[in-house]
Image 1 (spheres, rainbow, N blue to C red):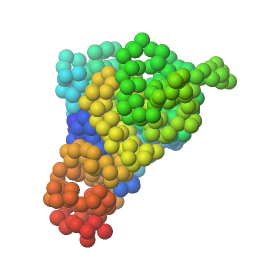
Image 2 (image 1 turned 60 degrees about the vertical axis):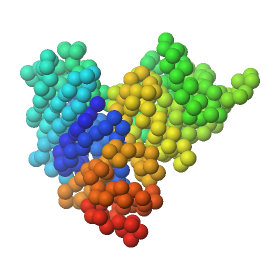
Image 3 (image 1 turned 120 degrees about the vertical axis):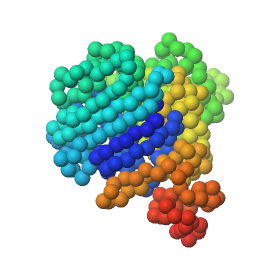
Image 4 (image 1 turned 90 degrees about the vertical axis):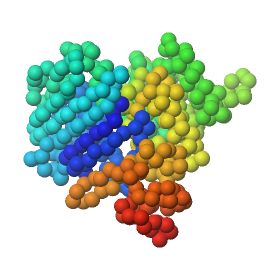
Length: 374
């Protein structure tokens, strides 16, 4: 788990430091830096698994200059810097990485005993941590608190797709292999995990009794199609994922993250997308239970962005980080607990409170109420 992260010169994150909780909520206007922060966490993890050029490549980018695309104001004279602190497997860790144009490692430090980084990487275009992980098996568990990261933005259309059968598939960032990931749980040796997943699904979606898989021929081999078993039907009646509600599909996806072979840190973009507002509290509650280890094989840190004012009513103030962006100084991250007169502000209707915190420009003042919130 990451407890504090400093990022410098990564996209609009010119110089930010954020403390993080087991469940952390990022709020702010569009283009305030929330997604860039998630990408900074994800990119740091990728530098431990991939060469620097690949790890710095933005999703969907095909350009030849990944460093120039990602560095603050495209100023290649600057170095991108990460400083991360946290805890993994009961041990504290701290890691620092600075990357310069090339891209090459400019500086790297991991003061963690009894393991150590190799003296130098095999190539200047990979981190010493990546080189060390190839030869020091015990290091992987010690640094998984910042290197085991998955980033997700579930697309309800993708969740409905037939997925090719794969061995031990991890849920993809869009969820387009949901059927394959669920099939792995259905056919895997951990029957308790399957029962727990179906129980949680029934609690979240009372009209659903469970899940089933149907084999579908594909151009090469077979795939699996997800079906939901309707509650109260004898004999069981199923509906295909193509006809299921987006809510059922999204709940199933989050439960796969909890029960599957997924990373230690889950970065989630806008979990409210595709949900009826009345189901949002249940989703936030589910993410909290995942972060606490109440659902799933182990606790997983959950960091998510949102544009829903309703979320503020379902989380604790200490879990909320407000993102504001200045064109000259870049993004600023403000803990909600540091907002003046927070208790009085929380008496505002949710839309007014949201506007005050993310849009009004009055966050550092005590001017609030109907006038400040318009």
